[in-house]
Length: 431
Image (cartoon, rainbow, N blue to C red):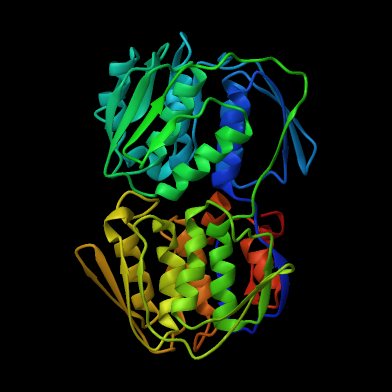
């Protein structure tokens, strides 16, 4: 799908999308919970749909009532021999250890860029836990057969915290007792905070967090059955909300509702970047209101929140002077190689970006040119280009813009609601 963004001014108020990080973790916890779960404010992105399909295939039943999902589960009991994680990196890394809790053989696959992402982590770790696993030279598909038996292990946390999320949930569900998961060089610690918070809300056995270097499971608690459903409300998404906030800083004023400043989501750090850039920002009970100001270049460490790189680049393009963003090494194994993709696509819009080892330098001067760009099938690249286009010197046309369905399917409609001039193809009315 091709979308054209015309230079626009935004105004009004909009609800942030549901967090897929929160939604997918809730789906996993609901699958492990032996009973009934009510998920309120569920997401409907492609990644969310993939998670729901996975838990059904692993034995849960789902009653979809729109703004409420009622999930019944008896634990991991696969009803299908294969599951697909779509293009969701979190799903493949979180649900693989959960599927390994079963004695049944399960084949795990995916689509798109997920087929090229390294999965040799599981080849190394799961056999230590009694799981038989075969991969395609460290890539999908994975064929595994459990049951997973918790042991004290040591894992590398430098590639993604998502592997640890799956192990923490699997250990808890398997009744881990007096064993530890030791972690070297853990990245994206706030996402582990989110995982532990979800586990807590679902009454799962929590490990002792020893400064993010060791997670120790003590005595396994006696599980008490209850007929009372677990209620979980999916948070507003700081990852998607970051694009709306940057859009407001560039072309507002706008108010974003539904983002909790006390959230454990890593991408809440967008507030720090906006304040460093001197964006006009106000937070009250109604939401976060943001408006354009004379913004300046800033320095920001995105090592623990690499998904912020795309909106940060759009923000930096409208800041006077140099912006330096640390954490480029975290971008290689995303939907695209995001460091290079951002450099190449923003160059088409006249924004100079340099990559130097783990640092990205963006030379902003408040001017962005009209251009034709390509999402590279990456949802966050499509949204970054769209936000940067709002005050460009001409129209910006985005090819493969339908990539936004992965995380924020209503993104272009929400821009239009705020007054953005967005040309959508006819078929996108069912988008």
